[in-house]
Structures are given as C-alpha cells and as structure tokens.
Image (cartoon, rainbow, N blue to C red; front, side, top):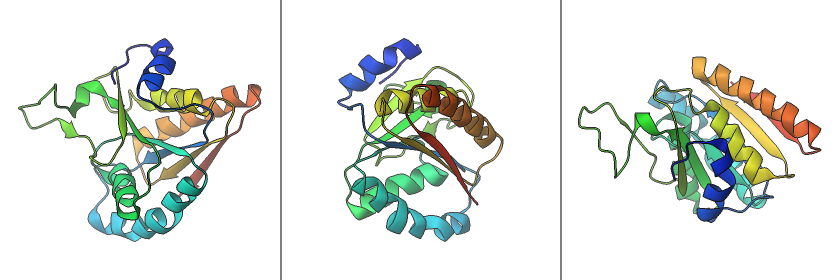
Length: 184
C-alpha cells in the first residue's frame, strides 16, 4: 500500500486487513552494513526469543521491510518458526524495487519476501521512513503497548530512536505505553 499523508494511514491499514488495538514491536537498526557473522551471532535471539514472544503476545511487528540486516533476519525467523503474526515493512517508495517499479539501474533495494504487508511512504532517502514507522505503530496499537527494539545500526538508527522517543511522549499523554529497548 502506498500512502502520501499521515491521515491516510488508518484507512490504508484497515484496507490491508490489519487490526488496531494490538500490541506491537517496532524493530529498528542495522541493515545493509551488517555482515553475515553479525547476523548469525543474533539469529537465535530472533528465532528462539523475539519471534515466539511476539506470537505469544499476539503482537504485530513493524520494521523497514527491506531484504537486508535485521529486517531480513526478522522475516526469515518468522518463516523458520512458522509463526503467522503480521510483519509490516514501512519503507521509502523511492528506494525500493516493487513489481510496479522495476529499477533497471540495479540500485533499487528489494523488499524482504517473508513480510506480510508493506507500507510505501514518500521519500527518496533512507531515513525518510523513520517518522512513518511510529505513525504506523501508533495507529495499530491504539491504546495497546508498543515496544521499540534497536539492534545494531548507524546514523539512521539514531533518527529512528529519536522518533521512538517522540512517539513515546505522544503515546504517554494518551495513556498508552511505549518503550524503547537497545540491544548491542
């Protein structure tokens, strides 16, 4: 689903068949610069820890949706375990290759194939999706809890953390809960 304005999110997410009022996890951090050794070092955290916990809580996961780093790892862990929770990729429309937008230059980034939904947001630079991750989380959580987990990451992860903190302040005033947890 492509969205251009924040006001479109509730309708767009409803049209995707996503329900609000569910707890969610916003996963932020390392993408294309994480190497195989780093990913293998945290694979069990995803397969044996995060994915079963998410499923037990009947939660939704929101991440950047590309086929790289922790987003790839989350998609693979969900597939390996056979869990069925919604896994939503929120990514910049101008940076990804989609069936309706093939990037013949070879510079377009592929979407991770095990995600259940994608929300393509305006922008042409990585990081433009940062505020959108938390807008999607806010709409889907409604009054339920939302948790942000940072795993690895670089400069864009700092922007994501800033957006998480801002979302926590907004959510705090609405009597819901938003937590941020950082993992090395």
